[in-house]
Image (tube, rainbow, N blue to C red; front, side, top):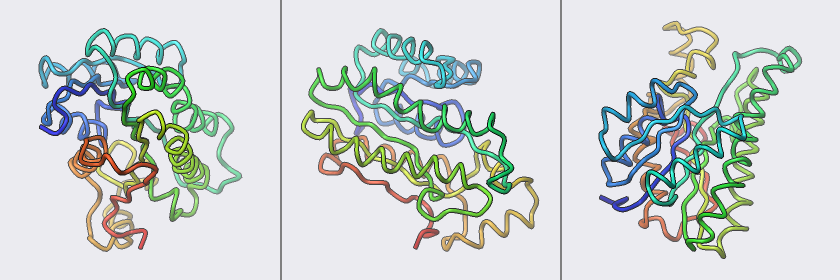
Length: 248
């Protein structure tokens, strides 16, 4: 029960890595607001988890939706102790000059600007409390890029740098900021990154991971729980690679 009495927001929390984080947080005693653009999935997971969870349909690319998210969380849980910026989008492998401006703008809005939007509203709440933990979802792509995913890689590199800068600025306010860098995992984005899901392409991806498997939602839940708990009270500005050794 490392998160007993804590209140948390997890964006993109209805599936994939986000759902793994939500489940672990609830199991560890937190009250969790599950935020997802798929509102039915968010409310369905909340119903499964019981009174400790609330599901909300939120598009993190919409400032009004983010404001509703913050207000609803305070109403549900009484405050905000933990923010997990997990929502993200990718793009199919293609030459950097081929990605449409529309797809680039969506990457920017969801992977980058959403962190700015949530910080503007959540950081003041945490500063008033004198404590808090923010966890951003980076990627091994931001450290060791794969070809033909250039703009996705760049967005995750931004997340890692933003995490470190946020950590420096907010440390004096009692707020810790860290990131997770997962390798490809069994999530809705896997097929997007691979272009198509075939045994041959899976084998190629797995060959780059020394441990020999993809990241799982449980892996992310365990790492996120540690970094957002008091066990990590001396850890800030870290982008933790949960990647089976891919970035070595």
